[in-house]
Image 1 (cartoon, rainbow, N blue to C red):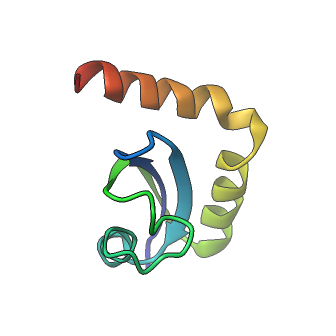
Image 2 (image 1 turned 90 degrees about the vertical axis):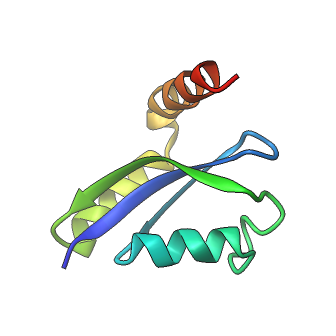
Length: 87
């Protein structure tokens, strides 16, 4: 079963959220329906980036890295590129 690591962009406050799941469609729906406490007041959210992994352990390591300070440049670049193309 594949696992996904994803980065969401809040169209409301332009902040990013990083998560991982085995069912990406369902999880995005939960975020946008307000069923996830950390994003319920930041809707609507769009998928800015996603990665697929073969197992949860690897996905969790990648999620942890993306939540770290080391990935800040990568995430900000994604955000800038999206916002520049969607003015």
